[in-house]
Length: 490
Image (cartoon, rainbow, N blue to C red; front, top):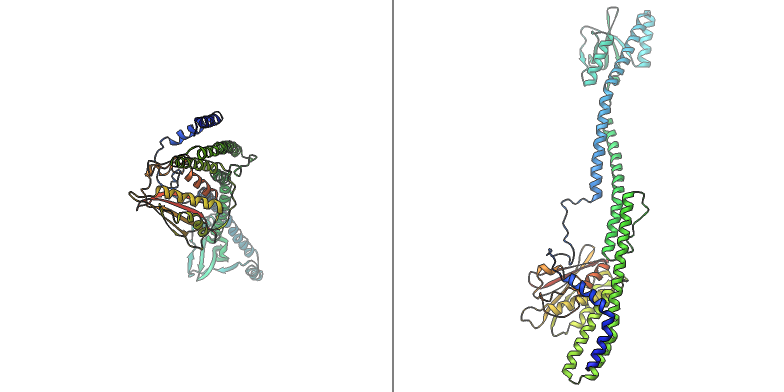
């Protein structure tokens, strides 16, 4: 190639892209800077610490508020029961004493015939019987609980110290009140429920109702607290996947603190979207405009260079530059995918076909034909091809003439796991997490092949947009393993 051709090419590229070249160089320096080692896991992700307890924020808040409200309600009911004890005992004793005094007065001021009729009327209509008290009566003093003791004390204060309160006389149950009329002893027998406190079943029903209402209130309060945090978590997840517009939060929420958080988050998402757009435009512009001089350069090589071997090497270098440009285009391409039901085996077979007869690769594919995933068929094929190409280039073991690569797949709960692994030297654990970072190349860890450093970063980006995950790890037997999980379609 003539010097004039190279000079014209240099003049064409230098003034236009000098600024962008400096920006890219800066970004490469930042990415190439040493980073602290992270545990192996999801490629390029911050290690996830498993929580000690499996409860999310909603259930933690619900349990804490529910326990607080339930304990407060139980304490409130016990307080009411305690405060109700003394007034209830006094009121019960007053009613019984009034009944005894009225019965005594009615009997004292009536003749014998009227007295019998009065006693019959009291027994039939009021459930009160007046019986003579005999010296040999078998008496069971009422003493079931504190309420009985307190009522007995009140009756003795109102009717006299000789007043006897019994729960049974001669084996007959009831509320027996002993009193005197003109030196004659009598019993007043009435229903024992007059001094029966509120039963334990009643209190239990009230406590269960109070607990149910407390839990319902706790669920409502926990939901009010958890809802904005859940919305924020969903929005962060969408931004993490690169969808900066779908994570917009409500800026008209009534709570001041939430409104400020939502506004700040939306402004941050807008700035990130702007930066992402500018990055995509810059990469796409550089890649697109490099194609024209690259095509002219290829033509000049084919026409001007007479040495076939030199022409072959120069054409190979141009093809490599063209491949790097394609990677830039892929990385900068807008994220628009059509997710459909895809037969995984067909996509893998199509992607693996160019490598079946490769001299530097031995490929073994074992993918069941009944596995279907939710993905973009074209993008998934590019992902598989990229991983296979990476394994072909870097998967050779020491002193081996070819790479041994295996592709297997199986169904998991809600996902399909596609594994692509080689039998090479693997990657040092310290840099394993950086393999999916843009512009990073682990040449020193494997073979020194040239490239853009965008291959695995594009794979990770595409997989996440399809709702899947990519994990890179070293195999115990040797080699690098890529675990690709995609949403399963039954």
